[in-house]
Image 1 (cartoon, one colour):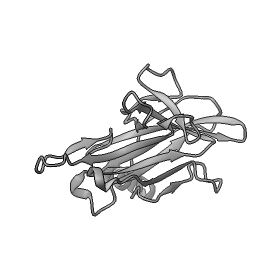
Image 2 (cartoon, one colour; image 1 turned 180 degrees about the vertical axis):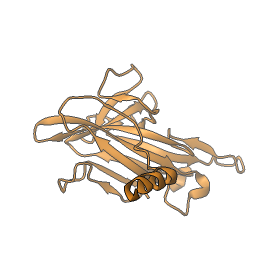
Image 3 (cartoon, rainbow, N blue to C red; image 1 turned 45 degrees about the vertical axis):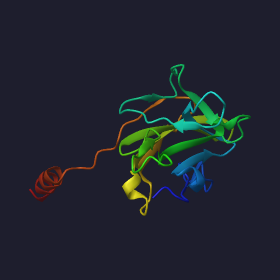
Image 4 (cartoon, rainbow, N blue to C red; image 1 turned 180 degrees about the horizontal axis):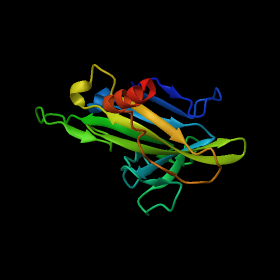
Length: 182
């Protein structure tokens, strides 16, 4: 699960992304947020007009990370001078006194999508992605989300397509094994 996870994308022993709880029980809000380190940036959309934070963007399959950004997105880092340095992955808002309606919060609530990241190896910036399956309010006792897989471009400054690495199907394995036997 995401809560408390530190993710080392390139296996160098330093976490590029850290996920932590951002619960605010008084406000009836629960969720998980992600924060990069000084040498990492997350692709976000600002949350509100007051620099109070951001949402980790849920990207579609085949999105080019490291390419031109639409005006609604920006790269945010943990050392950003405003609140954009942390990003909500998912959450749910329980309006006070309104009974049971649950208002989902974040791009990953109840869905699977890609998150964009840029991080440094030495002084060079690399583009990467994480595929995240977000939970729902009903998952409150379970992890609020899961990292399914991730990848990064080993060449500095080169965009990477957000594409899930398919697992070989059972039939493909059986056929491949049959061919080897013959």
